[in-house]
Image (spheres, rainbow, N blue to C red):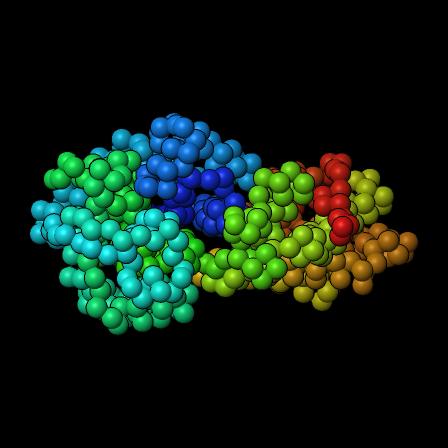
Length: 500
């Protein structure tokens, strides 16, 4: 019997600037999901990468006096270094300038052309250089598009309109396909109006930096037609049928809400034309705001995740980003919010519990995990809560409720802290050493299970905790903590931060 599979993707990020907290959030989220599925024994494939073609890349390279390829080669390591620093364990990292990808884009272009889904026509209209697409008069009047100019040129068009009703029918019959629901409703509302065809070419005379269209050598392909193909080029479409059959369709495309239309309209219609199944789920998360304002280079409020990691540690940054954003909604980032969450959950609850149990076991049991004797109602309450937690967390993770899953784990940590406070083993030991040992075993086992379940979010710190407890490869099952284990010494896990 084959194991369940989980194939998760991030958008491939546009390589025209340094990575910011938005890039970090999506990629950490994918990494946490991938780590959790691996821990369940699911066959897991996690894909991320860079989108290196298009007009903005060509312009950025020209400003730097470099070729587009040299520009991309210079910027790509910034993402790779950040992912390494953020403990991102991807299975593949695609750059769209790689031959393995370009060949598949050309294969896809040829296939949709051979299917009769591409035609040439002259177009005159408004073009947004910043968004790299043609826009309507209404979109121009909205003021939301930058660097808009009027262009008249002959181009190649994909018959996206041909698949409009098929897409509507699919979304209506697959309510899980676009999440959260308000994004699904947004796309269904968008599809109530006639869907235009998609311009999928740019003349080389205007833009040379792109993948050449195989049936029109004077053109390169539109950057979105190129970029979206990465989701099938990497798992083997057109090159490795067995691999592709294993991984496709993707379990979930994680995206920001600003690229919903390209993923929920352009991409499905492209897949319809190629005769391929659609991804199981497209999930659009919200934006990170700074004091209720969207991050923007022009406003100078973009948060550099490397600065946060250097100052507060990678696990604290991962924890905050995963805990603070309710998937599908916007979230606010301020240093004050970060510090409060850090002190509350990590210093006062999780780190404090490790300090408590290791300190008390060190003082009263020579640093050796005591034996658990007869359980009272108080211990059974902790045990039952811990026993039920893995299945609860699993369900929340499968439903992409990452923040709720983390809160459920931290609630066990809080409950164990209250239990230790109430049971006061430092007093009990004066009268009943066996009973005090049972209390401390229960508290330490609750900590261990919490650490195992949090390991997908905080791989570094939880490894320290489990190493201290001599339980590095343990599972979140009650009773795996071995009595008689000598605890290792450790530094404070999360020293409290002062709000500056």
